Image 1 (cartoon, rainbow over the protein chains, first blue to last red):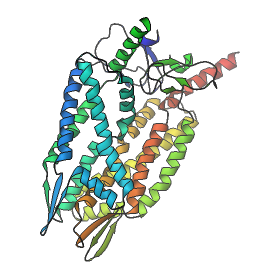
Image 2 (tube, chains in turn cyan, green):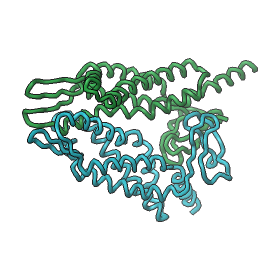
Image 3 (cartoon, rainbow over the protein chains, first blue to last red):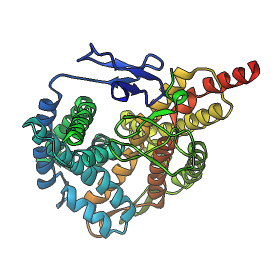
Length: 207
Length: 214
């Protein structure tokens, strides 16, 4: 019985999932929160987007991000070297925060999405599905690439007055990555994956 | 029908509907699907949220008083707080940037704290009013929280790019560290709050009328 029910995480309303509903959103009648997305082709889109995000992540971290010229002096900033520089300056708390929210957490999320949707697309439910979905659920608020992008724009305006700013290839890759990751968040729906975990558990129970 | 009336709730990670045992105090209940701890309501939600809200109000003071960024040039050192940074942008005519910083560093944290305090007080008073609007406010606090990080990122990018030996050097001020803590602590505060408490007044009313009838 419990499997066909859903409980609203905002207001605690308990409702049955209509048997006829195979596609489309299910909204909470009490508070209006979207409870189920049930979008067709979710796995395919997520697989494609996570491959794109992984490539863009590599580009972002390999090439120089911004170059800055002031009367004969030039400094290049890579994503990682900048963070290392922050640590060197003794701003380790800010360094850790930037490292976690713009490199570590996004990397973990992209890696997990890829290692989930890759096998699932080919019909295999990987044994680490539960762990991966849990980490994805907990890490969501700490991925802040979109915020960092705004930070980049603000600092560019600040620096333009001091010298010449040259955006590197990495910045363009980064901008596209922000949009790809935003799209991933819109499409991602863990519900069908949890159902697959359930299915597998039931099959194991029978065997 | 609300899940609490049947002693049920959803797992906060995998959303599985779980029935909790009637008698409390027999250890924690684990979700049969994902193994995460399941509670009818987040434990000590109101106390934790209050504590974190008060902590972030206290941290917000040094975050505003102390400089975010110190620019050292041959002409001397210039320290900028959040407000003086905004004023600098206004004076130089960058209104868009000034408003981005003003919204991200001042409006967002203050709005978030006011909303959380309002939600805490209204839940503690068991207010039956504006439940849907309060739910929307809660969703808003979760949505806007991380955008306060903009100013911290700006400081980090400036430090990473501007280091020309003795000519110009940018250093992070202590204000940046305090401000970072404000962002993190308010985010955890919003996570600690249980939005289901907003809607829990109805069971209270029902129980009271039941008791009155008996």
